Image 1: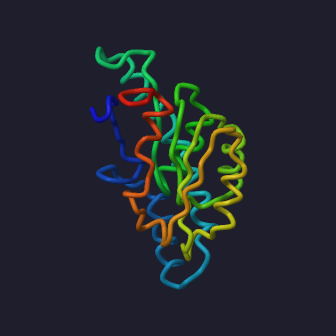
Image 2: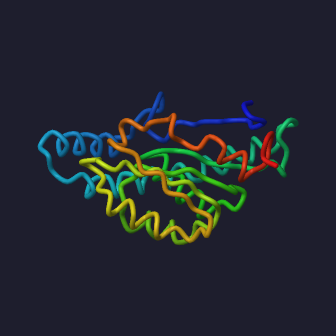
Length: 186
């Protein structure tokens, strides 16, 4: 627990210690080839991330169910979500589908139709991190995604560099305290 909050992280399907499916490995191989040959990544990443979100959103919902059954947490506990790149590709559809999530930090995500569709349904407060000089994720698509979020309470944090090097010291660490309550939120 930090700042009055409990924190949980789960690996996305095929990430961390979770084995990749054969199809996931094909997408990863194609992405690495495209990156090496300086070809567009979005045509590969859109279906790959969409598939990850389809599998991970129900896992996150089950995780939230289990957490809210724990004695120190309970059903009324405020829930926030934070993640960059792939975690945003999962988190945006999760926030659109899961009313228990009340605030989120997203960023550094490839923009494609399914992400835009999900963003139109995200109405919770968000903080959006935009890598300003990313050669893989262009800033215009990031700005378009930010504009697409239906939230009336949204903040854009642009930073120099790419989604590989997020300056964590620039992230607004008080965001969740303000949005979800906790020590120092009043």
